[in-house]
Image 1 (cartoon, one colour):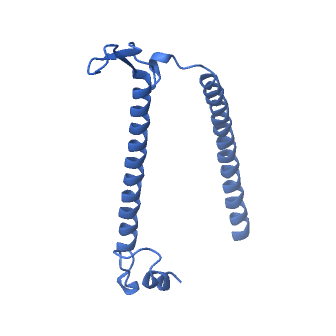
Image 2: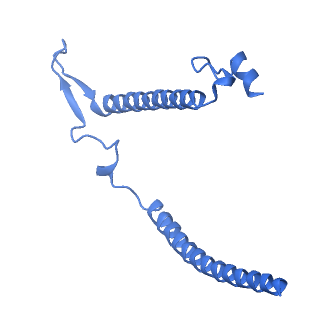
Length: 140
């Protein structure tokens, strides 16, 4: 009698698991369709050209300007595009350096947090580098 009760209980759990599995399969199929649709939209937008006015390196309206400081009677013409491109390149490098510096600081802070949460018995020194002798010995 007790054995029959266990069998019935297991059969009931099996049926519940099958129902749950079927429900999860349906949800997964819906996510798959949505995922495919989103990838199609991504492909569509990748193929579109960005308007020049929206691009960061769009050209200024005035292509040339006169340099009135020139000693010659003929005014020297300066190509503003070249100056703008050089400035944009410098700004891009500065942004990359700032981002790298921020990433390094964030990584350092996260590592300190990780090392601080280790039990005191490991005696980790969070001011040392992760590969310092003390920390390497502890990690082994």
